[in-house]
Length: 263
Length: 263
Image 1: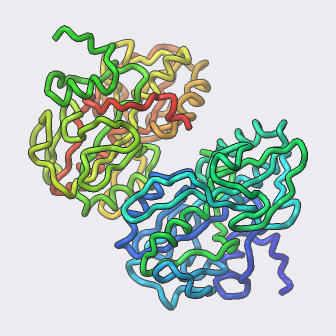
Image 2 (image 1 turned 180 degrees about the vertical axis):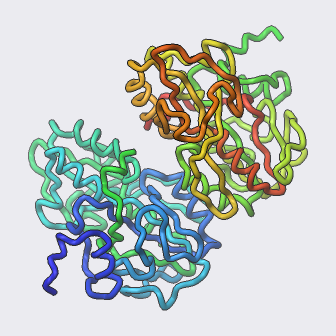
C-alpha cells in the first residue's frame, strides 16, 4: 500500500477499512479524532445493557447507541457502515469467542443494536498534550490492564467487577493528570485509584490480566483508570447467545475530535 | 404541624411525606441535598425512553433508574418508597393529565420502571454559593420556562423540542455562572444560550410557557439552561398509554448532597 495511513482523514480511513484494504490496529491513526469501542447485541438484550452502562458510566461511557437494526450513526460519523468500518470484529456465542472477522455484514440482524463506547486513546493524547509521558506509548506496548475487586452495579443479568488500566505517573504530575482526565468523563474520566494496587485487589503489577507490563520508575505512582475492557468482560460473564465486539486495538475512527468530549 | 420542616433530614422528610403528613412543594427543604424529577413508565416503553435520555443528556440527565417493578433505589436514597415518597404525583393516560394524587401505591404495576432525573434546584444553590443572585428565588416565584425551536434527538417514538429555564445574570457574572453550572452536568450543566432568546425561538420573555416571568435589570442578560420539563414535555407529545410523573415543584428529596453531583 502506498498510502500514508497516518495522514488520512477519519472518513478516508473508514473507506479503506470498509473495502478491506486495511485491517490493522488503529492506534496512532487519524490523530486528534475520537476512537471508540463496539458492543453489538440483539434488541432483547439492549435495555439491560443500556441500563448497565447508565449505572456504570465510568468504565462504560456510551458515546452513541444506534437505532435498532441500523448500520448508521447520527453523531459520531456520517459516512459509516457499522458492519464493515471496524478493522476487525469478534463474534462471541454464549460468552465464548467463536472467531475474528473483518466484516459482520453476512450475519447482520434487523434486531442488532450497536453501542459505541469511549476509549482511553482519547485521554492519552490529552495527557501527552499536557506534557505527561504515557509509558505504554513510550514503550510501544499495550497499556497494562487488571481485573479488580471493585464491584460494578448490576442491571438485569449484567454484572461483574471493574477492569482498570494503569499508567505510571510522576508524583509531581499526578494532580495535572487527574484534572486532564477528570475533564473527560465520556472517556472514563479521572483515576479510580492512585498508588495502592492492593486496595483494589491487584497483587502483581508486573503481571497484568490484559495488555503488557510497563516500567514504573522511582518517584512514580501507579495510577488506575476505569477501563473500556470492563463492558466486554461483563458481557463475557453474562454469556448472551450472540455478541459482536471490535477486536482489541481495532477501533472505530470517528469524525469527532477528542477535544469535544470535554463538553 | 409543630415540626420545623426546614431542619428535617431527607429521610425524616420522606417519612412525613410517605405517611401523608406533608404534601407540599419541596423547594427550600433539606438544604444542600439533591432533589429530583420523576418519570414512571411501563417496561415496554422503558428502552426507548432510556435511549432518549442517553441521546439528550443535557435536558434529561438521569440520576438513577429503578429495577423493573421495584419501589426502591440503590444510590440516591436507601429508606425509600417510590410510590409514596413524592409529595404529589401526576397520572397521565394517552398524554392527558388524569389527576394528581399523593400516592400511586394503589395503581402500582410490576412492570413499572422509575426514572429519577436531575433538577436545576441543585445548581441554583451552587450559584447562590458563588455569590450570584437567582432572580426567581429573590422574587419568590417559579423559574420562567420556555418552549424553544431546539430539536431533541429522537429515540423510538420519543421526540420534541427542548424546554429551557431562564435566569437573568449580570454580564460581569456570566463567566462564573457558566463555570459553576458547567461543572454539574448531572443537573443540566452549562447554559445552552446566552443573551439571544430569538435565536432559539423565544419571542416574549415576559410570557413564559411555564412558571412565572421575572425582572431583567439593566446590565443583565437572559441566560438559558436546558430544563427538566423537557422529558415530561416529550412524553406528553409521545402519548404513552400510562405515565406517572411528580407534580411540578413536588420533588423527591434524596440522601445525596448536591456537591457530589460534580463528580
